[in-house]
Length: 325
Image (cartoon, rainbow, N blue to C red; front, side, top):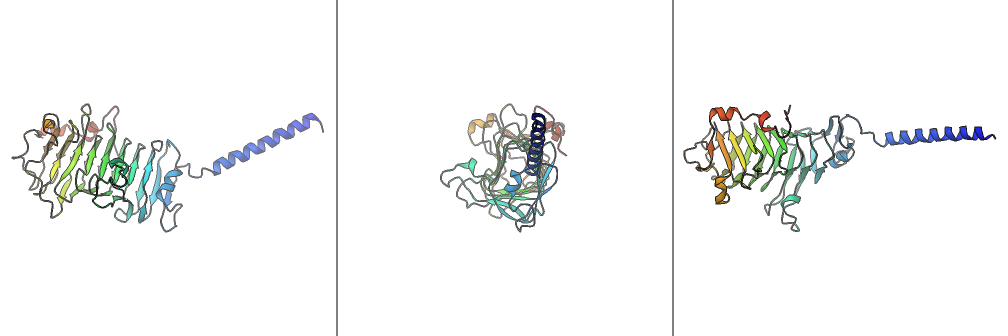
């Protein structure tokens, strides 16, 4: 056999092997596309666990990927890592599609920030029609949702817990909660992020504090509650709107319904010196708890002109402009 013929055969064999390797690589990534992934506990989807569906998503996707989760209880402690973007986790039914876990801060001294049920480190992530729950006993802080990523949206979701239900954990990140239900006991919405709560229901289970913002001094906006409804359990008769976890905590309630169980002073300073720096405001609220006559002197009532200037576009302009759909 001539050297030329041997060389041709070797080249042909190499091409075949390359083709096989390429096909195998493609077959190894069947989910690298914008198609919807279905998760179902009863085995009728592609996966039985949400974590397995998250694992097959490609890093830094430029297309929109939906993980559709059928009704069921998913006992999972989930992390959406920093390298995942453009993912939407959509439940079949908000009240019957439940992600749940039960860690609290005093289990093996884990502390607050490891107790999450769902931790979102990636950006441009959306949750819709789903419940995230930390159902730990009231034995310490127990986070249901822990966020680190930017441009996160939560639409028609429920967040259930007791102390520290939602931790918005990264300064300069932007979160939108729209038509969500959030419940808890103490400081159950807390952290340094910029978050807009639109048309949400906030349920207080005991006499305590709804918010504990830790907005940095150089960030213009922290928590904005717009058109929200605050309700309380029967035993909750003296509830504070918030207290500043750090010196420059920012919280605004505007166009909200406040029940009689909101304390007449409205806010607590946490530490006396924070009365000089905390940014706590209200505008055009209604309900029995909306009277501002006895509010603490260091909180503010916005003027109509000031309130009109606080738009979602302005609040979400941090380094760049984000206008959520």
